[in-house]
Image (tube, rainbow, N blue to C red; front, side):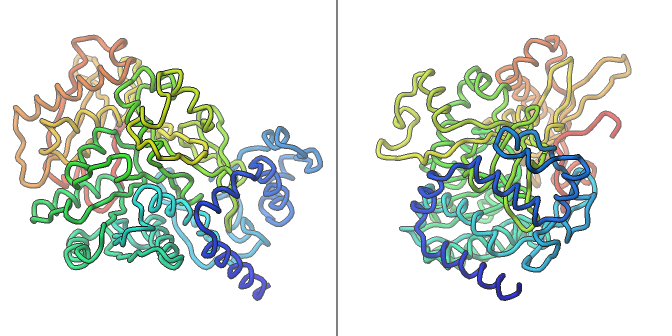
Length: 504
């Protein structure tokens, strides 16, 4: 078994390293993803002890799961009924951790943290997502590139997973150097000052709010980000196109569809999809057309919109939330990841665009010779429960973000906030937004009033429920301004929460 694991890993690496990106993706387009996920299901039912028991206790007859429609009847797995119900080795192929050489830990935002072992070979499918971004968006196959990993390093999935995948790209032959300062701004600045002048472009990879902090703090110290031809890779949060534009201005971006990309990733499934120049162009077009966005996505807010490989990560939709299947050391079969979203086929997306007057790539502002990859789309709003209800209107953090990203507000605030609905002494509801100020910016009444108006204007523009359900006299939010890293609302070193319940 030991020698077999070595042989399989070596074969996977040789296959990945020796196959150009275009060929890898073209080969996937010729595979039936439904047949592939059905084959994975059968293999897991035979070789993964926990999954075999999971099916048996639910009286699933394997002989009856012979086609894709039958597969769709298989019960969903989740953290509670599967990951926390079975010992970790039993959830792996062969009932053993042998072959898994690394581990990540989920954040535990929904309860007990979960451990996710994987092997280096399973990173290769995820490395293709990074390869797409670095090649299709950043032209890193033709430009020497410094990749600066700004995710926290440690057991969390972001930092080391990103680092490892970038190393795979360098090993494949891309002119890429990977630096790992983690989320230490002083180290990031030291790395960039010393190394960036020797490369044609620099890529910062990190969580959106932290990347913004890096750009702002670096500029305050005299760093000329535009001179480094800075590109940005994000993961972990939904952001607005106004925010992308704002960061583009601060990083010196000249091509917003090519200078940044967001990854849709989870600790359990790795990177599930990635923004492409095509998906960014579509999202930017929709940002100016809330009605079209609502028609396409069913809501007024803009989700993260990425393309994905259905042979690598197979998506289904259950009650407007996402279900994913994919091979890993702990394989996922109809795993409910509890993110609100949906899927759209490549042709389905083009049909929608044409119905709204988009006849060519150029109509989206992309170069006429750009050829999008014919991969399907998955859109993600984030956790299904990260909203507040105000006079019957669902208000999303994304709606508030756009207000804070307006030109007369953005330079004074960090972009972090806490959204809350409170009861007033008179028994009414009040919409409260606690806003974090930039370092050394004092609270100011005029700034507070400016932010209140900006948030209201964007809520009215983007959220039709808010505009129609909320009485006019209750539409202006109550904003409180807080110093940078305020311990009650914006403590350092923990994952930020954008909403609170009235009881907190």
